Image 1 (cartoon, helix red, strand yellow):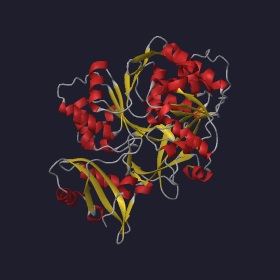
Image 2 (cartoon, one colour):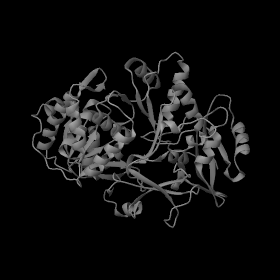
Image 3 (tube, one colour):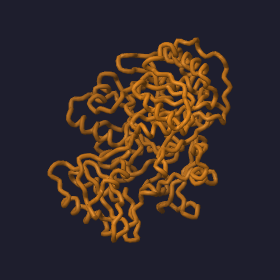
Image 4 (spheres, helix red, strand yellow):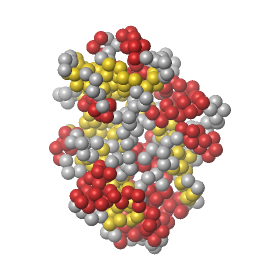
Amino acid sequence: MAVLRDYLLAPVRTHAHRTALVDGETTWTYADLERAALGLAAHLHELGARAGTPVALLLANRAEYVVADLAIAALGAAKVPLNAMLSIEEQAFIVHDSAAAICVIEAGRLEVVDRARDLGGDPALVVVDDDWARAIAHPPLREDVPVGDDDIALIMYTGGTTGRPKGVVHTQAGMAANLLSHLVEMELVGEDVLLLTSPLPHSAGFLLQAALAKGATTILESRFDPDAVLDRIERDGVSYLFLVPTMIYRLLDAAAARPGADTSALRTILYGAAPITADRLTQGLAAFGPVFVQLYAQSEAPNFLTRLRRDDHRTDPAGAHLLRSCGQAVVMAQVAVIGEDGTPRPPGEVGEVAARSSYTMRGYLGRPEETAAALRDGWLHTGDLGYLDEQGYLYLVDRKKDMIITGGLNVYSAEVEQVIAQLPGVREVAVAGIPHPDWGEAVVAFVVAEPGVSAEQIETGCRRGLTSYKRPKAISLVPALPTTAVGKIDKKLLRAGWSNW
């Protein structure tokens, strides 16, 4: 079987003179990236990095992240990417928990390592703001460092049930297969210009690797700014975007405020990570044309388990229901909906979404019980609730842990959100179950509305569209919905902030 570098480094050499990366005012060719990456790989090798050695990346969206990513792949080491939006305590825990032997880090984040050392361990450091020129100036790594299919290639941290992040362990063979899945499903071509504004330590990092394998050009930005995105499309010919739904909403608003903006270069908007409303998708199709592709997956099997294709984004009466779906299983994955007894549910019946693929995680680092709960009989149990239709399209209704039980009856937050999202003047909505002395849990809707829209108007709309037990017991008008470090609506924070009973 292949390992990740087999599918990543050879294409980088093939595309040597093409533009690989734009970071601020600096442009890198593929040859530039390869030289720097193999120099850094040699330096990391001197520091002790071998196949499976955990190497933590504490870097923002910058060219040095891309160089380090390639260097780690060349060595067959285990990448441990850390999102800067996590707290210092969470980052320190990850460095410690992963047993990172080396940290490639920005000078402004050294406090993380100090905290991690308090927990035990003493990783070697490559400080990009101080050591970088010397690190990449090493003679290129030429030693054929042995790498095995089952060596660890990635330890990616996600939310844990105990409040601590948990490390999702992926193998070299799994990440090689995952890169192939991205190349099949992204519909990315070498002529594309990909703009990445979300953190590379999460989903965007997989898309970056696919762009490098294809010979495309990637533009990195440190944050999402809708006006800057429109500028990039118009000025730099950006043809491919990766956005979460809240970003799409902001981009649509910015485009509406700039009716003369030229977005004709835009060919693809790949989106995922959170539900999106059908109304906003319809608005997006009118504004940008048939450019939307949706993905659904988890860190345990990134980024593609299902895909809603361009031609699935329909507004005609016969196909508009597909806008509520996250698509069909991709070529390299299988998806099922199962009941509590572990048997498949018939079309239309809600159960837990399960999946299997050649890039499903090996397990959770140091957490055998959680691994056993998630991986059963060869299937990844996602913790998402949903149903399949007759054509195999998957419809998500809630996270299993977020399903609301009110007065003994089950309420799926997605169903309530869909009704509220279609009401006039509603811009965004999140529905959560809040502990209640009488009902056990009460349905509460947190709504971002246009000026002049009242909670009473939303309540009236809910009475028309929802049966009584599904209607929110309270509607909270908020200026914005909180999001996690990866752009998902943070319902945990919404619940924690509620004190109105």
